[in-house]
Amino acid sequence: MSPQNISPVSALAQPITLKLSGKVIPNRLYRTPLSEYASSYDENNIESTGRPLPRYVELYQELADGGAGLICFGNIPVDRNSLENYNNAVLDPRNPWDPVEAFRPAIKAAKSRGALCLPQLQYPGRQVPDFINPHPKSSSDVQLEPCLNKTYGKPTPLSKAEIKELIGRYVWAAGVLAEAGADGIILHACHGYIINQFLSPKTNKRTDEYGGSLENRARFVLELVNAIKAKCPSRRFVIAAKLSCHDFMEGGQSFAEQCVVIKWLEEAGVDFFDISGGTYATPAWRGNIMTELAERPSRKERGSYFIEWAQELKKVLSRAVIGTTGGWRDSHRMAEAVAKGDIDMCGLGRPLREDPYFVNKAMREEVRFSECDIPDVPKSKL
Ligand SMILES: Cc1cc2nc3c(=O)[nH]c(=O)nc-3n(C[C@H](O)[C@H](O)[C@H](O)COP(=O)(O)O)c2cc1C
View 1 (cartoon, helix red, strand yellow):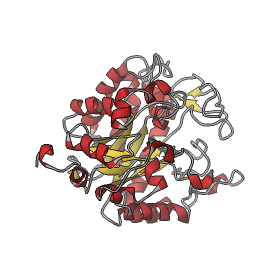
View 2 (tube, helix red, strand yellow):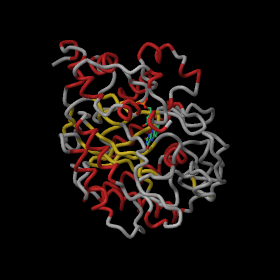
View 3 (cartoon, protein in one colour):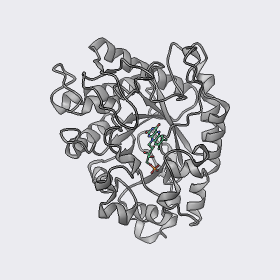
């Protein structure tokens, strides 16, 4: 059926197939990765850190019941000493508990109504608050200035051996999640974390084969994708990436470069992209902090923070499915973007945190959040 022949909201109910894996996402709305803050943390017992608590499972059951076609878990750091924040779930091979059994219940819950489930793997690099780790590792030694009410230590550049070790951590975590029943993983390749730190000329000052040209700066993420593919060789295991369209920073990752990177990632086997943008220093994904972005006419007319860039990135792709997250609050605007073919899917973060049943309501055309209804921190915790 061509997009012109379908009613706006029914556009959102159309399934879509991830072509490499052959897996079908039952509709066009997904839960983007969003920290749950529902895992254990005890600074006096680091070994117990990052184990999902019962609330973690309940949350994914609610999201499954709420109808999202694809459910991503919030970021799961692959190193228990480098957390993006307290109470993150963690996959670190040194933890003494059984990681497969720890993650299996939440994955089962997320998939219980037919959604696909992609947990997000992450390493924060220099974006680890110094109260968690004052000695971070990054692509080079460029320190992050204080931002988002936190301060950050001066990073040490990862040696080549440490890069290999870090990739090994992601690969191990992907294998655990595959065994625990996940459909695949989504790499956190945006918001200024380690993959951005390698890609951006602003933070990557290396002179070896991981720095300099775009090809060199992209080496880390491409090696990562290839290593995960080698560990999880089934075409049925999905590799996805939440990718920046732009970091909105002078001298940083440009949109033009991201158009090349996304194509390389597709060729390497990434089957799904979730487009976002910004870094801790330029937190465009929060929508309300960078006024010049918030005031853009397209943002005001269409709601979405990144649709302008995401629809151009879609044109570069030949196979992968692409969505964008940030700002979607209105079912008609989401349906219009999908029906026109500007984007394949729409991602939801804070709306699903405020109301896990928002997707089913959107399918019934009931729906609308106004921007001011949704704070960064859940209302219940304010
Ligand atoms: C409290 C909070 C936690 C977040 N955690 C993550 C995360 O773990 N991984 C990620 O990729 N993005 C994370 N984000 C960004 C969101 O996924 C999303 O990109 C952003 O909230 C914009 O989408 P929205 O307008 O639908 O909320 C987080 C955002 C907030 C406000």
